[in-house]
Image (cartoon, rainbow, N blue to C red; front, side, top):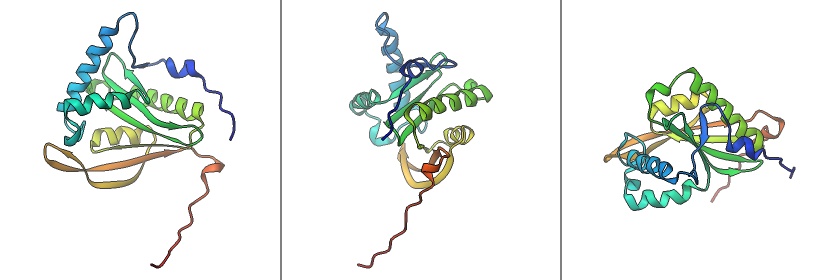
Length: 188
């Protein structure tokens, strides 16, 4: 495996419209207020979180998962972009939650592409995946270079109604990604 030189400063301070969503030791109250607001959004906003996860205790437990990745605040708490399950020389997952519709536009797309490239380059990723039942988030994923990879039929339940989840991926174009899995058929 090749050694990876990660630019941690670039990941901590990517610039542009993004800043790392973390507690400021000088003013921890601001972060906790934002986290409380985001928790409320997860419970109430259309297609933000499956029914089975929209409980206070479950959302609090999700906070632990939150810290296993890196989340970036967009603008002045107008949305979050998160990178989770980051495996060097391999892959990671991406999550978008954008609640300020004024953010949508060319600048958001350009800045998201730049941040995604920072992750691809720093961790030598081959692929990134995301999924969403929300057509707006899927459209944003398309705009930043993700391609459709399939649909999880009835994969999301919100207010007792089932929604399909669009699965999307972005693959780094290089020679290492051209090996295709061989199909094997076995009779049982």
